[in-house]
Amino acid sequence: KQDETDPLAQRFAVAQALARRAGNTARRFFLRPESLTPELKSSSQDLVSEADRTVEAWLRSAIARHFPDDGIVGEEEAATAGTSGYVWVVDPIDGTMPFLVGQPNWCVSIGLAQAGRPVAGAIYAPMLRELYAAMEGGGAFLNGRRLEMNADWTLTSTTIGFGATQKATPQEVGRFVEGLYREGGVLFRIGSGALMLAYVAANRIAGYYDPMLYCWDCWAGAVLIREAGGEVTFAGDLARPGPIWAGNASVHADLKRLSGAV
Ligand code: 2AM
Ligand code: CA
Ligand code: CA
Ligand code: CA
Image (cartoon, rainbow, N blue to C red; front, side, top):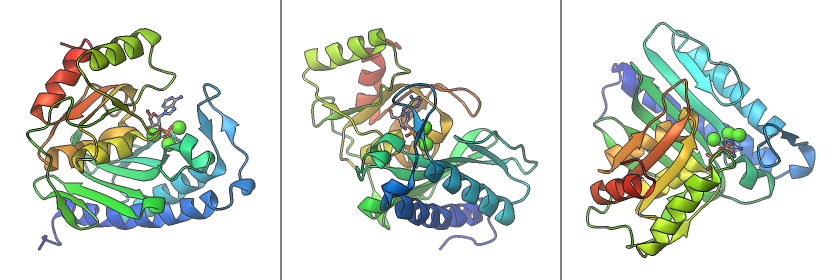
């Protein structure tokens, strides 16, 4: 049983509850898509709607109510600084594109940083009825069931998740896909980086590479990977996007090599 006075365990419990509640709010929007008027952000495939904004605003006020001294970084609003050393890293809807076209593969992602390090995370995918949760030193779980990554898998044991939004360059995409297929690998892609990381932790895909993610896409997922026994490198931080590689030790190294990072 977790220590209820431990500041991280307290936040971890709240993160899971908020991910569920936020997910259920997003789900109500999802089931009434005619009520949404999506707007373009940076490109024709970078969208936002009132679902994203409403859920993030709700999350921010709920976090501030529970932990007024914590910082918050999220996709749809400017970061707010805190004094406690804890920063919440939230994506109200990861997978906005799938969300807006009626695909079930989207989620709420809530990560926690302590002194800039990923220490806890909760990912809730309402249409899949899946809650992924992990806290440093406490293991990774899917709906309460412990996750443990397959240490024997290679690049070709099953498919490999690849992010590659329009922010990735054609060169980055081409080099990686060509190398992967040359070595017998096969691509997997859904429009949610957080869920692809969760799928790696759950042994549904063998690894994941994205040339450019923001912290809110991958913070919670990074904790899941580590606590499920895998390796993850995020070259960005709380302020800057960057590439990410995830898998067991062998797949993680292969993905770095195929992307030209080493
Ligand atoms: P989003 O749905 O929250 O925007 C897919 O590779 C990942 O990239 C998702 O986590 C998605 O998060 C994000 N994403 C999708 N389109 C993007 C874009 N145009 N710019 C930056 N990130 C994007
Ligand atoms: Ca977005
Ligand atoms: Ca995202
Ligand atoms: Ca988002």
